[in-house]
Length: 307
Ligand SMILES: [Zn+2]
Image 1 (cartoon, rainbow, N blue to C red):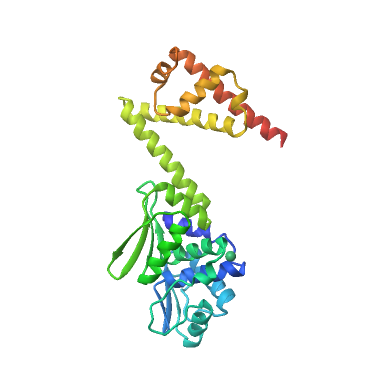
Image 2 (image 1 turned 60 degrees about the vertical axis):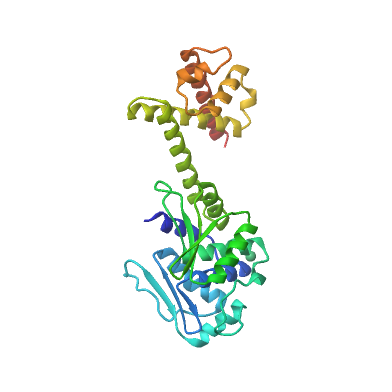
């Protein structure tokens, strides 16, 4: 399953029962799907989870059923269609941004006053017109719509929410995209995909650390892997102690060691030992870091036992 599909599957765990948010999500879907016009509504997706969520969402929000649904055996892209003009008219009514039939669509800000609804609207847009690249490859999340004004207004909404995405166009489509891993993490968290967000974050940390170690250490790949693994383990132990409030209770020497390891995650033991004032021996540093990881391990175990 692609990273996008996994993310959409995760998003589908959020229930769409809260009325205000369900409407906002459905509107996000309509403005970012393949067609939202008086003669047809067409939603094409690769996500089975989203295709299964849609009929329920549209029934709850608009009280309409799709006129054509994908078969259960169908592979590849799935298509959901409404062609009944009465149903579509009801959807336009409820959507609330009526106007003339050939006037360009706008985002109805009236239904987006609450923060929960804005997040739901972003989620709907991402479901129908969004994708996110596997962070192992690169950092990229985009929202694509054919409605020019909708994209401009979406940009305003996202900026209001503290994001600074970029925009571009591809043929008749307007695209808003994020290139920074932190922004992608924040967006995914906001719309309700914390697992995908964490995956972006850990990939970034590992990639950075690997690059830094590679730059510093002139040795074969196996050694780099070992050094990265050891450093990650030490950093995780320190973070765990920190989170549990145990760091301050350590002897001063261990506290200094923890602080220096966090400051220079990419240094080898020998290099890190030289950063001490006065410098310590490599084996002394080794024992201190070992002590820290042991302490963190013990605390977790006692924590587990007391539960
Ligand atoms: Zn809401």
